[in-house]
Length: 295
Length: 295
Image (cartoon, rainbow over all chains, first blue to last red; front, side, top):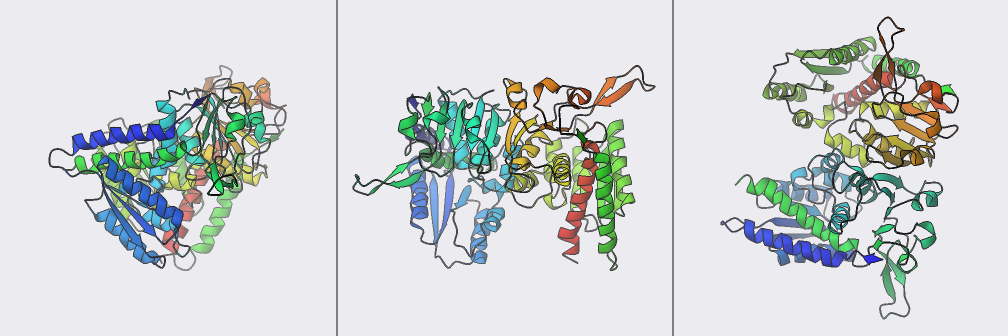
């Protein structure tokens, strides 16, 4: 079994981006600029956004964090989105989800200019991705594709099974894996809560991407020898032996599977760190597509 | 074996639409209006467009056919698209593909206002479809979903295999079948030219959608008893016994399969007629979404 070290790969890619930023922003041009909007006090969201901002600083991006109180109205947030859409000094921006319940998330996502949608959540980017056109890819699937690419894992023609059909992971990764591209060209089956006889699919799979949110769901007896496992789950489970009282585990039972698989992503330190890296890659791309080509 | 009679179903749905148009356009409101743009002299395209216009007339839609010469420039066509986008008397319009080679099809598709994109080819509609948001669905996949629905073919949890991953059929139908919706909730495998051991997939399938463009490709020994076959192929093959010298066949070998399958769409008279019907449904929907709600 070989570990797919998302943390190390993420650092490598960040260094590559930092070097490119240095090169591109020499001629008196400003560096790429990512803005993040955080509404409310959700502690997990605050950590995620802080992490994104810190990553920007480390690689030489400008970053702006816009923090708004929990009671911000939908109209106020839409106004912020409109201002960011217009702001020529911002290459890309994200509105951290989830939003307070009185705000319609779809409405906010649809208001973001697709050219600045570095989260890749806008339907226009999603559709372009599905149609094989250049697009800002959603962060987690983009990170997974990068891992497969950098670890030289052969995907073409392989039997890939994706477990979970969310809009941010399962559905887009199933599309990316089956696209006519490299990596890509896999034969993909998208499984979900309504799938019957799930093990009939997982036992035949050469590559499994699991994003169900169920701790240690995937076991060794559900897979074949040599399978590649990409584990998107991050679940907190009780661990009385630890000081904190809990630990993080994936959707795949790492210990049980470790003897049987050829590659596996650990949790934490696998897919997670790649997600922020994808956001930075998209922002760099937006900077090149719009700022550099127009200035 | 039961035949899925696309021609009859198409007529039924057209009658339903005609009745709705009659009901909606009483109060001095104009009926729905579809415009079609045809560039050049391709005879097949001319037939398709004429067919669409005739269908409009039969069900009480207004229709406009804009015919332009082969040498029309990309800029001239973009100007026509812009005018149709602005025209409040047009609810939806299509630009018939393929276009002459000097015109970039993607550029034209992207210029169409997604709110009038009744072909469902614009990335914004494609992305909304994939994300489960209301959208104008691409005509052929929409027609297939309607067939499955009206013939009460249970899709949920079923093993569906889609052969072919084009942007207009294979990829979108794979998305629609696996969506959390009714019909939908199937476990879908998208197969294509790079798939290895294709028969391993087709032999397990409860439902097969085939859109490869290879005459009589799918044979009885590749499927299991009771399979449902949706045949999107329309291939012209030589038939010396006929006056015309040719006949139309699908991608599935109808005769060979007829004993083994539970349902099958014939070619011609299966998926084909449903495609125009979907376009009319989308136009009616656009009329309701924009004209009726704003007047």
